[in-house]
Length: 76
Picture 1 (cartoon, helix red, strand yellow):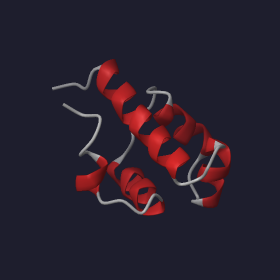
Picture 2 (cartoon, rainbow, N blue to C red):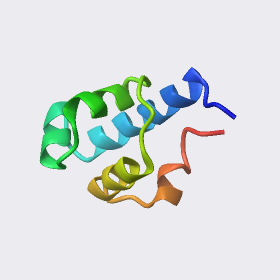
Picture 3 (cartoon, rainbow, N blue to C red):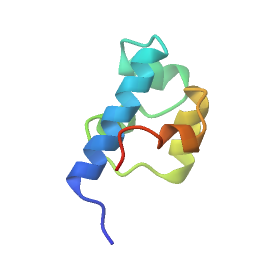
C-alpha cells in the first residue's frame, strides 16, 4: 500500500503543530538545532517528503513526544 498525498499532508501538519508548540517559529532553526537536513525537514512539513523511520524517531525525540502520542492526533 502506498501512502497518499493526504497522509503526507497530515504528517506535515502534525510536525508543524508540534514544532510551533515547542516554541520554534522557524523550521530551519528547528532542523539545524536537531541535526536534521533543513531541506528534508521542510519537505516533511510541507507534505512532500517520505520521512524515514530514523528521522521520525529523531524528530519525535527533539519534540519530546512518543510515537504513540505523535500519532494520537491528526490521523484517522
